[in-house]
Length: 172
Image (cartoon, rainbow, N blue to C red; front, side, top):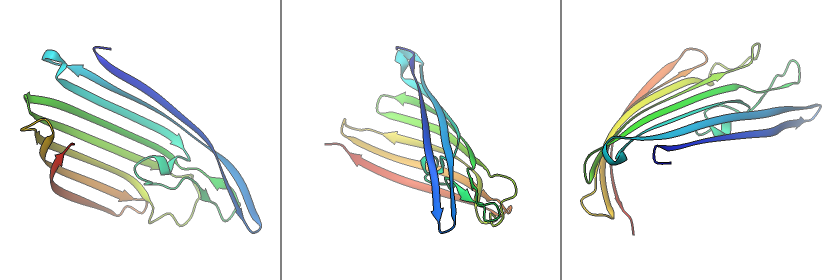
């Protein structure tokens, strides 16, 4: 509609392992909802939101940030980590041909209790970014973006990054 758009998605999948004497199956599932809300004069600005939750969907969220499933060597059972991810972005048109976006994202993995050997696995991450894009002519975009992100592992180790990027795109 004239106010924006909403969407929902879901996934249901079967995960299995056959490793010599060990064999098991687990269900993977996920739900996702998103919205793009237009606002401002002539609906020139927008707010974008998305949230995803599920188990056994690591390959589909955050560029494989978490495993789809883990085999518990003690029980021989396939365990699925829970995943929550959220994204929010606000895009503003400053003047025709000049726009900026401010965005943030968060991802958290909930591993099943009792699994050993997870210390080097990803636990959570977040990032925030802001950019500025200029389109001097219809087919050309020139931009700059500043991003800060942090990641934490299951064992508590963490790290961060700061990145400044420049972009040029010609659409033909």
